[in-house]
Image (cartoon, rainbow, N blue to C red; front, side, top):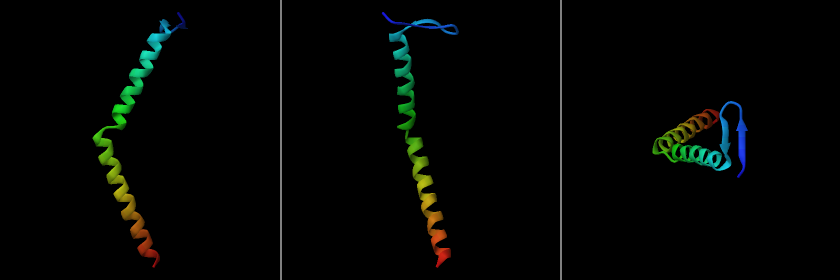
Length: 60
């Protein structure tokens, strides 16, 4: 069995490290899939569209 030796965290098995990475990846995916983030991105896109429209209107 492979082990990872780290002075700060001690010796961990490779399977334990993989489960930590999987848990972190799952947390990131849950945050990215959050409805709150989707709403914020939609609002920012709408704001960008509005600012672009105003900038184009000033050119004409």
